[in-house]
Image 1 (cartoon, rainbow, N blue to C red):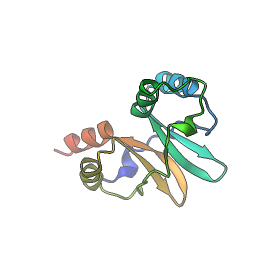
Image 2: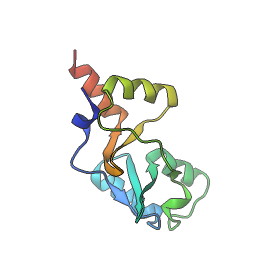
Image 3: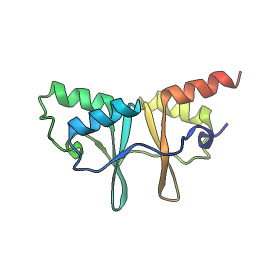
Length: 123
C-alpha cells in the first residue's frame, strides 16, 4: 500500500501569521494534531500539537504567529512511498506527521496513527 491511499481530501492549512490561539482552535475543531503552514510559495512549515505545547511551556503569547513555533521547511514524502517505508522513516526520525507532496502540491498530512492502521489492516 502507498501513502496515496492514506491521504484525505486535503490538509488543514494556516498562514504564517495565524495566531497560536487560532491554530490551536482549528486543530481542536478539526480533530487534527498538525497543520500545514502555507504561504504564496507553498508549504513553508508544519505546526504540531507538540510545537504548541512546547510554545506554551516556553511562555509564548497566544497571539504570537505560528511562524514563530513551526518547523520550517519540513521533510516531505511523495504519495507513491510505501506505507512500510514511511513507518520505518518515522521510527528512525521520530516524526509523527509527514506532509505528502506531489509535484509541489500539498496533498495532505499523514500521521503515525494512519500509518499504523494501514499496517495492521494489511495483516
